[in-house]
Amino acid sequence: MRSKLFSSFIEMGQNITRYSALPLTTPDQQQEARQGSVCLGWEDGKYFLWCANPVHPEDMEKLRVRLELLRAITADEIKVAYKASLRQKAPAWSKGADIGLLTVARDASEPLQFTFQSDESTGLSTFYLKAII
Image 1: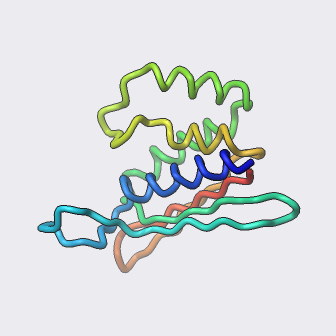
Image 2: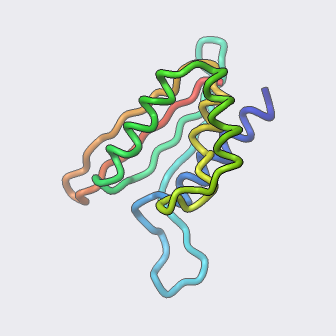
């Protein structure tokens, strides 16, 4: 349980640092920080991890398609996809190995939950992801 919580926590944090649409640092700073949050909680006898970060509207559909696919396949199919992804080259748009959502889905005991909330003041949306471990 601890390793699943830890690996999913790390992946959610990396999602924020790599894909959050709002930097917390100025462009001239060498170390970049991005806006988002990760929470750990206990609900109905299970741990959950929840993360949120702003995303550009053009990234929402890509995320939605990927997450709907992960929600529709079995745990065994997720494990096969994870292993296959480790052997493949990451897509050009990916800023990592492209296994973050697969890792979280693999660690989760239930299908991933997600939603988007538009923020008209920034033109961005907040992406919310919840994994029950």
